[in-house]
Image 1: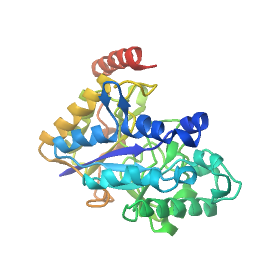
Image 2: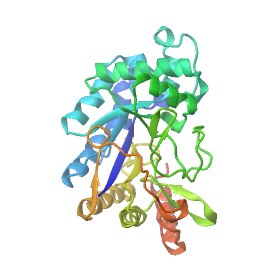
Image 3: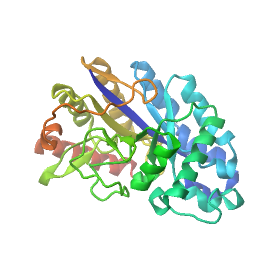
Image 4: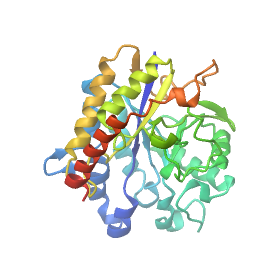
Length: 326
């Protein structure tokens, strides 16, 4: 059985806070979490509706850092409905919120955009704060972590190990120049023991010129997503991780539903549900295992690049950008 981890980075917008301040929490929630538009919702409640309809489970990496400016209630409003629907809550940290925290900043006056901008000691403190806030919001103690902007480094993993967080998922082989500074290369595609935790790479497919493209709902077509899962099953991969966001099914300005991406997510979920030999899993119930048996080369593990398939996706992306890019 190949386990698929559908992971959703779930976060308020720090940019919205910078423009609207503390009084804008309700609107920020509606735009970034609920995905409210005149035509309906496309945020986490809508995503969970689709998941539930197809009998699938997802992992919601929830950012608790807005508690610095709004208190724990802002996090509880996210955590409670996810848990009530039987999905998984794990830890996500966007350090950008520190600049607004004032005296609530657990690091004093130190700020930065990414986890890697801080010492191991400071990262240990931030992770501890995040754990505390998620648990105060009603979540079980998190066992998995993903850095905001993927901006982790090796010190992040060491700090997570010291905090007892067993799984980390910021390594993204499919983005060549991401903010991730974990010292793993693009050929590391499978979960592995590293610096005291299990690192769970975000999935990818082969792209032109020997490159990779990351497995994100806005980055791959529905056909690519479906063929990726079938390929992973057929070569015997134990797990594969997709990434999405709480606002990903919206237009770029978060005011309309992006019907192309919304239909892509629905189609992918329907395919997962009907494909023999595949199931969705969570970190709490069935975490990724380190694969120690002999595996194919990195090239063989990736869905092979196909020019016609890529061209179709590029056309679809161009249409999406034209209709929903602003």
